Length: 297
Image (cartoon, rainbow, N blue to C red):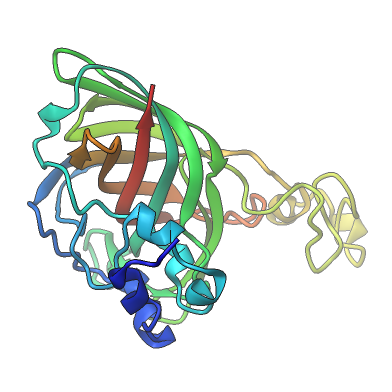
C-alpha cells in the first residue's frame, strides 16, 4: 500500500520535533473551541487539536507507515486525528455504539501543590515530563450510548488502559503516578460526559521496598527495628496497601465523521498519584489531552 504524501512527509520529522509534541500545553483547535464543562470543582474551557496539525496523522495514514518510518519519531505515542467530518455533534444519531481503537493522548500534566504564600489556595502547577514517549493509552474498547434527548454515556471496558508516568515539579520533586481511565463510567451530554474511574496501585503487592518489606511477601517490619514494629510512626511503612483509588474525568466530543464512523474530542481527568504502597498521601494529578475512537454497532 502506497504511503500518502502526508505520511511520507511525517517520516522525515526529526526526533526532536516529535518529542516536543506531547508537551504542548496550549493546544490549538482548528475547528472550534469545545467547552469541557465542570471537571472536579472548576469549569474548564479547553480547546484541542482535532485536526490540521503538521505532525498529526489520520488512522489510515498511521496504518500506512512502516516500522522504520515510525521508529524513533514518537508517532507511536500519538492518537489519530479527524480531518473530515463535522463539529456538529448532533449529527451522531441516537443509539448504542461499540468503541474500537479507543485512544487517549495526554498533552499536559499538572500537579496540585500548596501555595507558597500563607493562606493561599492550592493550585495546579506545570511539570516537566520525565517518562519516555510511552504514556498514551491505546487499543481500548468501550460502549458509547447516545439518547434521543441529547444524553450520552461512555464506559471503558478493556485495552491498554494504564501507563506508568513520572513528572517533575519546578522544585525538583518527582511525582510518579499510574495514568489511567480504567473502568471509566460517565454520563452527561456529548459536550460533557463526566464520571469516575479506577486508579490501581502504582506498585503490586509483591514489590519489596529497600528494607525488604512487601504486601504479600518479604519482611513484616524493618529488620533492624523489631521491637518498634508496631510503633505508630512506622506502621504505615510496615503495612503495605495496594488499595485502588478513584479518579474523575470529563470527555467532550469535538468532531464526528458519520461516513467513516470516527469520533474525536478532548478530555480532562484528575487522579491521585502514587502512595508508595500507602506510606504517603497522594497528590492530585490533572491530565488534559485528546481522544479518538471508531464507532461500531
